Image 1 (cartoon, helix red, strand yellow):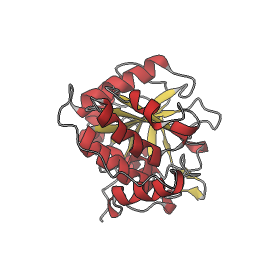
Image 2: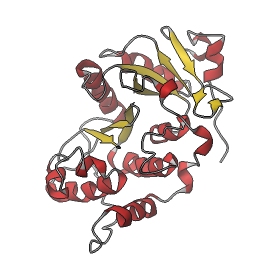
Image 3: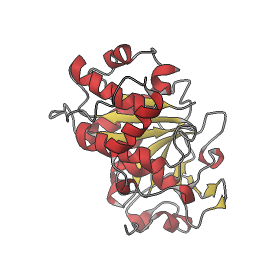
Length: 263
């Protein structure tokens, strides 16, 4: 698969992004990886913390320039992305992986032996807002609340084909203890993007926040999604969550923000 042209290098000589049709605030380009400097910038992030409205003001114009928005947390113990041990050279292409096969493999590793993988759930046909509008709302909420697990959100821009590919585009290693090639997880994010209107809204050192335009509306639907979440991120249920799929599913009904954390 041919890679997209990366607009980020142009920001080195044009920090405001005017040549891309942007008016960016002061920020910095990140090319730091665990293996040394990458051959081109992996992302740009603003120096100033994000506030409600930042996503809408910059995210839309950036997307038209070929850059997708995501909030990055600079307030964690590992600092910002330059301290996240990014490994873009270890990442494959998300489109080369089948999400059902990926989740079935994780399920086999993590679920009880007598529980077969239930397969992918159905799509949600309706949404009360478009995916991009819902993403802006979730981003604004995250910027306003600054929870303890996402203390200092800054708007970042990434060169990626689709929102679900953002973790792979930067070589994110947050789920390293669960999966060494984050592109396999991005394949799952892609099917959630297609079925539920998901957008990747936030990345921390080991946290991913997504907006969901069409979340499960019933407990039955939520139960199907909960199984996928368990395979995708077992720690969500077993460590930071309620401990059972049934209890976890109840919290997914009508929920427009999904948060994942890997130990």
